[in-house]
Length: 105
Image 1 (cartoon, rainbow, N blue to C red):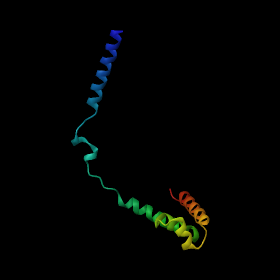
Image 2 (cartoon, one colour):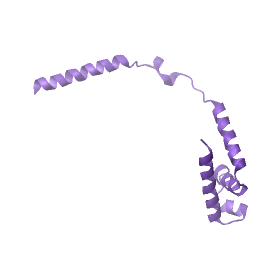
Image 3 (tube, rainbow, N blue to C red):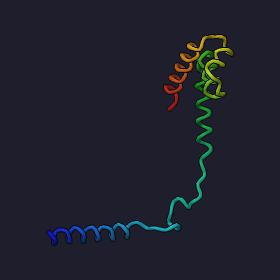
């Protein structure tokens, strides 16, 4: 039993040494120390895609999803603004979100 445990401990020790040699530690080699800037053109492309999809969407769906999703209005306030029931607003927002999911990559 002792020889078996010593073999396991020796192999674990050697594996740790191999791992340490493969991995370089330190701040100078760290990826997090490199400056990182988000690519603004990707967000602009996404914004353009969203604008195209919203333009193609029926007006009653577009108005509901913009009021709820973009402007942050409550369902009750959106229902008052659009002069319809809360259930109608919830349905329109749900369908508009479905259209957005289907149209955007």
